[in-house]
Amino acid sequence: MRISEEKCIGCGSCISFCPVGCIVETNGKVSIERDECVDCGALRRADVCPTDAFYMPAECWFFAIWCR
Ligand code: SF4
Ligand code: SF4
Image (cartoon, rainbow, N blue to C red; front, top):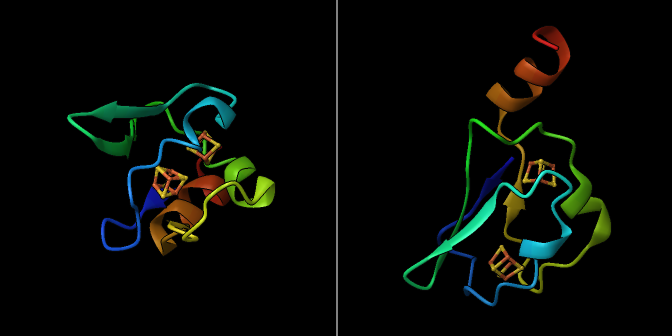
């Protein structure tokens, strides 16, 4: 999973919803620790982002389907 820098407003609403705690805030910017993210899609399904900033790029789908 990725966060669109253009869409994210840094509200922090998503941070506590990630089941593996891989969303971090640094200097007012929110990002995903890619090594920790398991591409579960929980945040998109929870619909917690006010700007719909989460997206799943093709390489994540490939990883989730073929490398797990
Ligand atoms: S896809 Fe899952 S593990 Fe990755 S950031 Fe979203 S909720 Fe967390
Ligand atoms: S909920 Fe959306 S807008 Fe708010 S910090 Fe998370 S990704 Fe950014």
